[in-house]
Amino acid sequence: MRRTSADYPSLQHQHQQLLQQLSGLQELRRGSLTEQFLMVKRKDGSRVKRGPYPLLTRKQGQKTISRRLTDPALLPLYRRQIQAMRQFEGVVEGLVRVGEQLSDLVVAEAVQKKTPGELEQAAEVRRLAVALAARQTPDFEAWESLLLQAARQGGAGVLTTLLRHWQQHAPREVILCPCGQRMRSRGRGGKRLLTTLGGVAFVRSFYQCRPCSRGRFPDDERLDIIQTTYSPGVRRLMARAGSQAQFEQAAEDLRCYAGLTVEAREVERVAEEVGHQVERWLAAEQQQLLQAAGTPARAVTFPAKFYISFDGTGVPVRKNELVGRRGKQADGSARTREAKLGCVFTQIGLDREGHPQRDPHSTTYVGAIESSTLFGWRLYAEALRRGLEQAQTVIVLTDGARYNHTIVQTHFPQAVHIVDLFHAYEHLTALAQIRWGQEAKAPKAWRRWLEAGDIDRLIRQAGQRLPAFTPSKRSMIKQLCYFENNAPQMRYAEYREKKFFVGSGVVEAGCRTVIGERLKQSGMHWSVRGANAILALRCCILSGRFQDFWASRTP
Image (cartoon, rainbow, N blue to C red; front, side, top):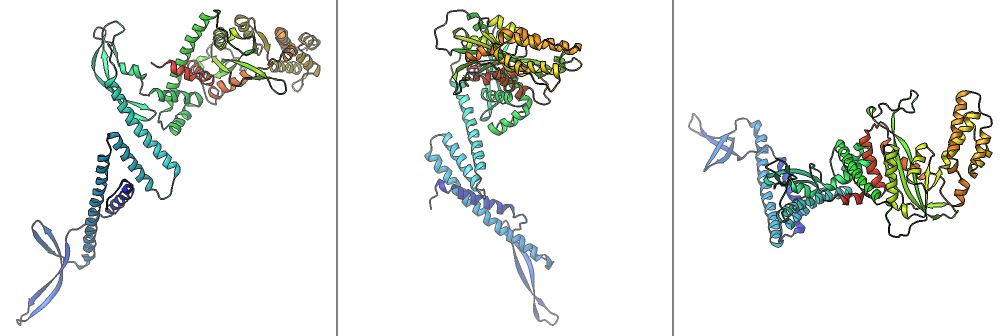
């Protein structure tokens, strides 16, 4: 009967069964048991038949040798060992028969198929079919995992071939050293790359400049794998994973989701390295934007209301990053450094109730642990990129801190500056608590004057009776000064009439999402450099700009 490829699983199953039988046959003995009878002559001259005597008979070369077994108790053991040898010979004969049938199938496929790749694919399909058929009960997830593993292994093989083909056929140019001299090949060096498909061996030429001894691997430069064993695709995954979760969790996620086994410290190193690259990319873009600021731009259709908002939140850092810094602890020490976050978004109209509505896809972020001066330029460049100079109405939402006014006056002097209403309510409640105790709430009249933007009246009424106790008096004056300094930015009735946002909820949520969820988890203590790298990476990803960044770095 002619066998087809459809018979391969059943033949492999027979092959496995025969191998299992073979593994159970351990005590083997060649030969057979026979019986010997002897005619013995008595003293009176008569003959008598004696026996039977057991003999072990076997072939040795061209001779047949028999040996008498003197202990009858061992006969069952000998019989079992000889019978096992008979079974062994039968199993071996079956293995040879099945092996020949499998070989015939492979030869038939080799005749039909044209390329080594097709032959390898057919062999992999056969292996998978055998593995799946060996299971007693169906396991869909196991099948998926097995097929995914096979696909990656096959892909890694194709990728290896593709790299070799590229090296053989890519146009070669003269390799020049930065010193201007031509570099010569000094042999080849290999390294093992981890790709999204698995491990791949890569061998490339090493070039060296004879005058200055500087060396280069040009193929590494072309493929973006300089001084790394991770492919660009793997580094991209590591950077995204490391920006989203703690590095240990990120390493586990990569193993589960992408089949990549990397250590947590490697995820940290790569994520921070990519974060620094993002920061350099943003810095170069910022410089270009600032240089082009004020030049005539093409007319574009732009939303009527353009918002800029910024705030800060403390990030836990290492002790050496806090030397000489005062903080909010009882002893005046600090445990955190302020990470400043800015966001830009647009308003797309009003909802059904007449409230301003934000374009949910318009929000972009910038942020860093840095001085307010540097942060102001960072935020200004992002606003320019988003269309600040084409916007009809620009609104800046802040919490009323002193450096907020400096940034607005320096970079957004024509904008409508609004102090967040909810921060204003917090200060109003603090006024009431200083005056009437910790459980006190701000009087309705105070809240009404605040909502109306009548800050002068609020200050007069709240400041009529200052506490006699000096610390309380000082605290109340501080709160009153907050309202006095921010009065021009608290015209809330006017802002609501113009359908402006009066709350900084977008940047407040951004502080929790962009910074808090990744940089403020329990037990974390960052270096400023590391925190800024991850923050730059998160801002880039959450602003929908990571693809642009990655495309910009392609050699």
